[in-house]
Length: 530
Image (cartoon, rainbow, N blue to C red):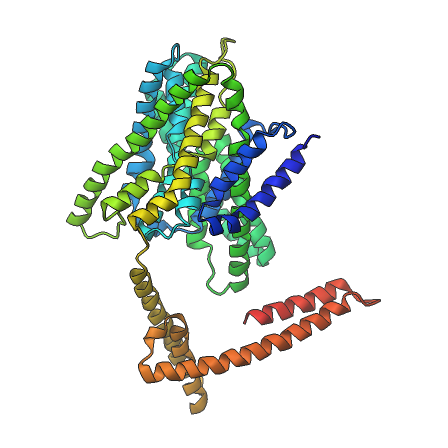
């Protein structure tokens, strides 16, 4: 019995859906479970090797995942945390690359320095998907999640550029530090320009489309267009996607476009779940490459992989300790909104959250087979095995133990701060509603009874968000009104349900026009949301 590629894809998609509730029940991150599933499938003889060209893995998987992650953040949040993010996403990636390259060049016989640098570049960046999908589900303080998300989103930019420079040096046999630095700068400039241009264009096009379905469809195409166009112009596709997504999050949001916002949120949750599951399933399935490489050399290759894993993990800790201390000192000296770890426990959690994943797999598999001179790429099989060793060790060991570590250290989100912020937003929302009511009263003559009713409604807007806004008596009155409203809405839901059942039954009747039935049913569905 054999399993074809399409069946394998459906298995991964099903696993992506099932791993979410299973992970919640077991207290384990769903991406880690998908990696284990991929490993299990890779070990079955009747499961074929994944037939995806390595150079397509990043363009297919990264754009939607990055776009979905950026939707959970904002430009203001990134700007507030730019210093710790740059310390991790640029400086730490560069330092990790140098340390890994030095150790690999020393312990792997015959491995050229440029090839060792390529290895260092591809294992240096913690995976953006792993960071957000694993750490973001553990109830960590928002400041930690913000920094980990920012690091994960931007470190691939640095790593991929360094990787491309190192690969070019091995393949061509020449290397110029000045050209490498210029390539890095030009890559960033081109990416930002492409990202801003496509973000502006997509924003204008969404206004012209108007329909929520078309707008959401366009939002899926834009990340791919941004990535491909930037790569064609020799820019960073990852940075272009991030720039476009940040622009759209900041400027393409219409406060009154409720349907598009609700449908878009659901759509991108689905995309994030499915693509994340497939990505980490592929990480596990690609294990066969490492197994084939290790034939007859297990002890030697495992020793090298263990040494590089140690370098990656230790360098991150040794970097985080002084970097956190320095950031705290600078934070204390200036009044900023910067979110930083406030204790050694949070620093330890940040250290242990540095898992590698999809990007490292794609870069390892994309290493050329030959140089320009026609010779075999030096040390390619060793680099692939070591890379997979780092990915599996960090993703499985750290990913599986991170929930335990978080619980053991007692690192939890500051729910008090979140409630205070929620309370402040409720006050602002109620005041805005009252302010608009006063503006309406200035141009329209409202009956006193209607004016009082609308004033109560404005107050209720805030109370429904944060009940603490009301005083004891008014809180009790609000509870009574809420109970009555709940009863009214229950009855309305049952009435609308009966109406929907009747309309849906008409779809099967002779002579019924399905499009008209669906249009009426959509109207009832929208009415149910109110």
